[in-house]
Amino acid sequence: MTGNKRDAFSSCHPFVNFYYFVIVIICAMFFLHPVLMVISFISGFIYAIYLNGKKAVRFTLFGMIPMFLIAALFNPLFSHAGITTLFFLRNGNPVTLESVLYGLAMGGMLVSVMTWFSCFNKIMTADKLTFLFGKLIPALALIFTMTLRLVPRFKHQIGVIANAQKCIGRGMSDGKLWMRIRNGMNIISILVTWALENGIETATSMKARGYGLKGRTHFSMFHFEKRDMIVMLLMVSCTLIIVVGSYFGRTGMQFFPKVIMPPSDSWSMVIYLVFLVFVNIPMILNVWEDIKWKSIKSKI
Image (spheres, rainbow, N blue to C red):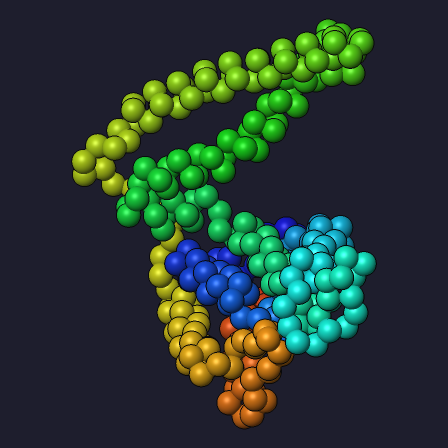
């Protein structure tokens, strides 16, 4: 379950989820073709709204759009490559069309990658990452999952400590400036003490449960089913077509010394369509599951 809706893609096998996000994020990072960038961002934004609701809209409006504008505006100010001069700055440096377009592309790339990472963080939970990498690199997987777990716990615990200290007149807003600083340091000291004690308890618990012993088995509720095989075959097929298109230069564009777009032929249209299908696989699954569910309900 994700948000207020059931996400069908998140119920797939962790390897299917991980493969999808690796390919999508790589494409978002390296495909600077405007058509593919627009497809990537819009698809990621729709999926983020499906997963996170209004939070995704606020994240885009107040986080992504300013980041896009900063990246788009700063590049022409510091990069003056290109042959098409638009105007000159007061210091005599030219602002070129190529630098402006490259700045827009970099801003779009950054926003698209951040949007897909927000979806990744929602779908790829700690138990999925542990399942994928626990056997391959168990120590690193353990450290990573514990780090993900400790961040929200620390945030919650420091709130508990701050509220408790505030009740006895030692909050961050009590007293003069030096008193507030001292109270804050006291809260941090209590948090560090709690963290150390918690770490000792966790280590003792893991040792008692036989962590690290040879031959110790692991429970897993993830199973590779027929649906996972179908989705995986679809993703691999799309990936192969996209890789071939990238090899023949249909997924990027040249910015310097002048802007050169790849040819818009039938092969390019195929790449656009395949990429559109690939990045929207989660939403296709969700729509399909909704149709199946409505069909089942209508028969009851």
